[in-house]
Length: 218
Image 1 (cartoon, rainbow, N blue to C red):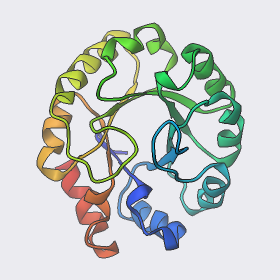
Image 2 (image 1 turned 60 degrees about the vertical axis):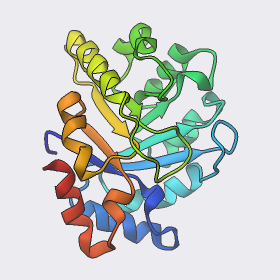
Image 3 (image 1 turned 180 degrees about the horizontal axis):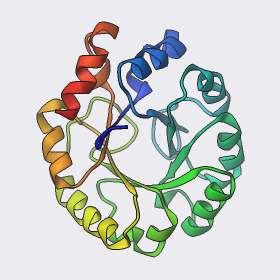
Image 4 (image 1 turned 180 degrees about the vertical axis):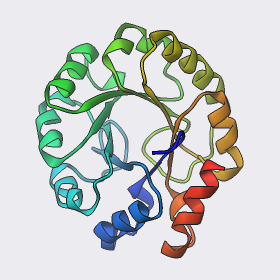
């Protein structure tokens, strides 16, 4: 893996051939596969759950970076583990006992992550930072693709990078929402070391995937 990890969001892929799309982005240089799970309740949109992820799992050996925009989370942790999720990221607002949820994710054999909405302060992770392997900064409001990057999140990324450095642990600091080649370097400079991108990766069709991924790195 490179210093900056690229995790293409399959929300922007061709849903008629998701397995093939995952193979294509894998071959094009993706470091992880970002899977957005939405329940139509925590966020307005509805996507898919563990059965689809389980069907997609054989198409890549890269880590499945699964972002849960659902509530509640706890009843489904084992199902996502069985489906093949490697990283399971949850929102603090999705349940009353964040620490217990993160413990359950790790106990199920996955790496726990916490996702912060644009209006969620960075300090919310302080009590659990030693229990997580990923912080996901939402630089758009969750639930819809194609939104513009919210500039105020750069300061939050800087704050979170400082917190991560203080732990001495290798915690992924990932950013999702409006990430494009023209802002990727500012996001990386603020402290991110993993980028989620949907339309920026999948635009132009399969022949462009490798170039699109490379442009996010450079």
